[in-house]
Amino acid sequence: MGLGRGRVALPDRTRSPWWELGKRVFAALAILLGTVLLVYVDGDQYADNNDPTGKISLIDALYYTTVTLSTTGYGDIAPVEDRARLINAFVITPARIAFLVLLIGTTLEVLASQGREQFRVARWRRRMGRHVVVVGYGTKGRSAVETLVGNGWDRDSIVIVDPSASALQDAHADGLAVVTGDATRREVLRRAGVAEADQVIITTDRDDSNVLATLTVRQLNPDVHIVASAREHENAPLMKQSGANSVITSSDAVGRLLGLSSLSPTLGAVMEDLLTYGDGLEVAERDLLVSEVGKQPQQVPDQVIAVVRDEKVYRYFDPTVTQLARGDRLVVVRPAKELPWAPRPGTHNEDVAAED
Image 1 (cartoon, helix red, strand yellow):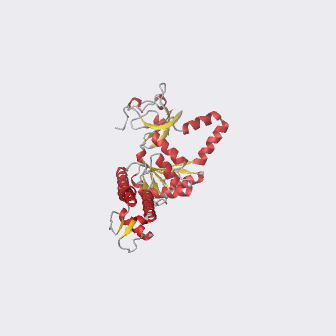
Image 2 (cartoon, one colour; image 1 turned 45 degrees about the horizontal axis):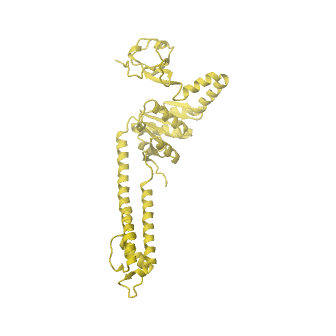
Image 3 (spheres, helix red, strand yellow; image 1 turned 120 degrees about the vertical axis):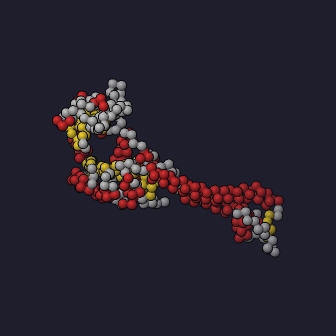
C-alpha cells in the first residue's frame, strides 16, 4: 500500500482501515464459500420447490446460501430432513450471524475510524503554531528531536517531514506526527504548518535538497528560524544565501573532532562530551537571573562562554559585556544532569532579569 504524498500521519495508528476492511471481507467470503460447499454436499437433504426433480445443483446451493446468509429467505429451497435442519440451526445460523457482523460491523468501524482520524488531524492542525518542523528523520534528525525533547519541547509540537516509509515508522514509534512527502514541494511544507512554525530544522542527506527546502521554507515563512545541515563546507554560504539562519557543516565538524582527538585525546573526549546529549556536560542558553544582574560573566555559577545582548553574540571576555544587564541571555557550559554539588541556575523557577 503506497504512501500518500504530503499526507499527515499521526502516531499510534496501527493499520489502514481499508486493510482491516479487506481482511474482514475475505473472512465473509470464506464463510459464504464454506456454507455453499456444506449445502451442496448435503444437497439430498434439501428440496427445491421450483424444480420437479427436487435436486440441488451447485448454483442452487450458491443461491440458497446467499439468500440465507443475507436473511432474505425466499423459501423456494428449504431443508426437509432432520440432519439438514440441525445443520441449519447449529452451523448455518451462527455463520449467518458472523457474516452480518463482519459486513455491517466492519463498515461502521471503517467509517468511525476514518472519522476519528480526520478529527485527530483537524484538532492537531488547530493546535499547531510555534511548533518545530524537522525535515529528514535520519540520524541527524533523530538527534535533533532528542535534544529538543530533552530541553523541554513537547513531542506534540514537533512535526517530521520525510518521504520514506521507514522514517514514518520510526517517527511514529517515537510519538511524533509525520507529513509524508518531499520537503522541496510547497504543498508538503504547507501541510506541515511551516507558515506558522517557530523553527525549521533541515537535515536531509543531500545539500541540493537542503538548499531547495530552505528556499521554499523561507518563501512560506519569512520570519521562521531555519537551521540547516550541510555535508560540504563550500555549500554552507549557499544555504545562508537561501535563507538559513544557521548552517552546521557535518563533515567539517566531524573532521575537526577527529583532528582534536588525534592531537589531544583528552580534548577530543571533552568535545565529544559536549556534543553528546544527556550525560556529562552540555552547552545551553538560558535567561539571566535577577540575582546575576550587574555581575561579570566570570562571577556567574555556570561557566559562561558567551552573552547574547540585543540579538548579538559576545564572547564572555568582550568589554561590551563586562557587566551583565537585564535582557541578556547566557550561553553556558553546565552539567547535563543536576548534581548536589553542581546546581543548574535558571532551572528552579528563579526570577528572570527581563528587560524593563
